[in-house]
Image 1 (tube, helix red, strand yellow):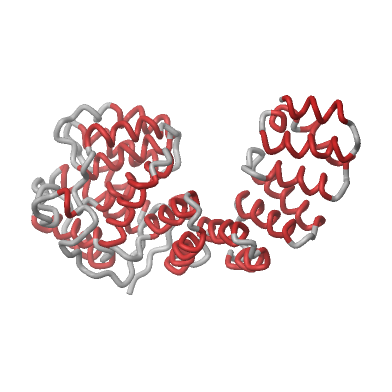
Image 2 (cartoon, helix red, strand yellow):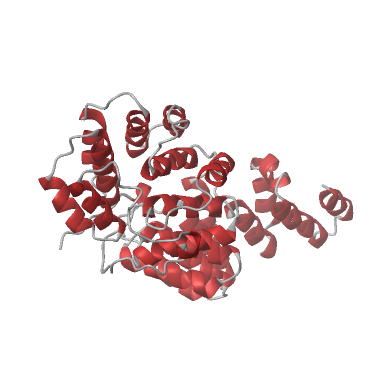
Length: 373
């Protein structure tokens, strides 16, 4: 069986594995009188492309890919489905080929194909959104086109705008529009709408139990609401689907740290390939784990590595300050504060560390001033 290796930058891509057909008891069933797969979404697609959409939406990417290779697109709707299928399969060069060479007619699909090409090449997300905005007012925008528009908003950080679009145009998404549901679940997480994040991601999981993107979404949602064991299970499953991927490793480490299993978090770090770049969040979680077992030197090294990988790494600055404060290394803490003064004084957790360190040094005036900030 052919396996697709997805670039880590597109960790949202879905992966093919051991999928069963969609049945009519999905989590969104109550919102519809009937649950006929692709009855509305595929009306503009040719017969072959209706089959392609059904196959790639139920995890059968290999079969969808083979059928696609035997049936070149002839219409804009077929070409757009071809680009979506190739995107889901991880064949990004072919996505670009379709987007850039198909003779698109003027209209929404032309704009959104251009936006998808920008996203795939890791171009400026703001440019992708500006292009996609041109298609937003089309009353006949297909659901997969809506998904690309929402992804453009995601990339540009316009999460509230994306959430507003969802609430206005797709408050009750069709249960068979898997890519759209996947993106909607991620948007719900970004705006802390945990109920809909669970609802949408669960609908995706019903169609494809090995959907990597939905597994990550469920892990983040469960982590946010304090369901750490469930979050750990989701992340572990995602790692099984895509071995060596950094995002599930980071999530598993975060879950282990929240559960107090610091040695477990340190062990999970070894799931990353030796030659793979290590993202800042993995370094941060490693620092938290080493701090948890009292190894200040390794914790400091990990937090510094996180800041080197990403100067804005969430939690790294607080973690490093905490290591210095708890080990009584006040000279290093002062140096850190002087280097990152604005950021540390704008972060309530860092201010708390600085204030407690001032108390430890019996500097009551400084501690009072910091607590007042």
